[in-house]
Length: 422
Image (tube, rainbow, N blue to C red):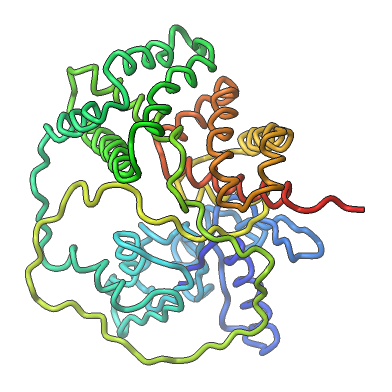
């Protein structure tokens, strides 16, 4: 199995392996690829839209069966499986012996991915991993909490009330504002909501107090408490029937307010864009590492590890046509071409906003993102009725909202900041 970082990488791996096999007349080895949707290679002169079916030349429903040699398919028909998210976890192929990793793996995702090799099979040798992107220490740390015995401390349901108290004590909002936002947000009838502007207006007071009355440290703590409450409620609400309606109201309010707050200083990261070009690549064997874990006890796991958001990563440049597919892969959504058109409408609104145009031409990317953060939520709220599912996803998944905001913010900045042609 070759684990790739994206669908585009999977396409290129498949093409490169097929070329290599053909050039060296190797007829006893074949590769099959697995990914969802379609992807276009920007460097492909023909602009072909590749899919799993078009590359493999058989239906997606047969990919796993052909690789594993099930349901009458030849056992050795395919020896190499190239994956992009799909089959990276939850795929059971006992004969799978080796894995080549060209993707950053962290935490439980690393465990679930590498565990594809942990299946017994008669005559199977020692599994082998060749990792191009991760170091042994990070992989060992990922496995350590799950090694031997895993103990999870009982979750205290009162944790929600503790976070609720912390948030109210900040002075940014009170229960009256939470109730008001719920009245504006809650559906009156099917597809019937009050004015979208009222949603934004209901957050204006808390947003202003956050900026004016809290210093940098208090702002970071408030964000952290908002995020922690959202994660805790989303987890506990799946297993506990709450009779306190105020907790649900606060959850909706907190997710909306968190998405509307100005970004942390420096959260946009660094975008080198086209100023750096990769011209040479060298692969060097640095040694074989034993990442075995010693038999030492580990402490109980925390159901809510850490609080607040980690540092933002460096943004990567990508074509807008690839955004929907990447979001589907990363967050498990089922966004369609209709959703892609909605995103393009968002971009159209932003690109014609005089304030954003001026900010892009006169500022660095980081400063531009401060202006764009508010505009981003304004437009999303204004088009909420067009696609309620996207709006809900933005409220419920802060990572998704930040991802979408920085993706379009980066692309918009590059478009607007570029000097006009002759």
